[in-house]
Length: 186
Image (cartoon, rainbow, N blue to C red; front, side, top):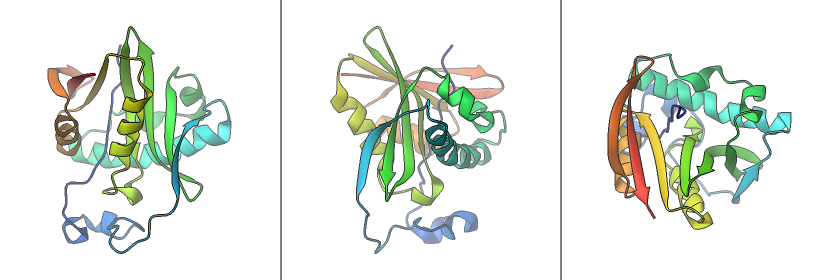
């Protein structure tokens, strides 16, 4: 059973269109800010501190999506460091200034890269981090297609995947949430 995939990007053009709780967060507008040195690295989920860093990004990002899709049934909101370490997923993190700001988690099977999580800390929305993480995965190679699912009402994520060359494959209802699946052949 594929894990519910959630992904966050902000549609607003500039901070004036953002909800008040987001526009007050540091780094949200990105305007005039100097980007600190950033790297993408594999995260060691068996180290508790790394699993906690993942949750520090994942939970706020999933909370934003929960608000967007009007549901609190997002499994990632209840994850623990133990669940992260037992997920069987390979985690890549966008690390900026020593802080994990974005995460892509994937499982590989049968020439397929199955994205289980692609999340960005809300304080770092609209900086292209999700795209850079996806680029990193695509450059890894070793697979012939990428699959991912997201909440159908998560229009920023749906738009992101379509713009990145993914095709919609199906929509299902799981645990009361409408999910849309996407695929990209490599």
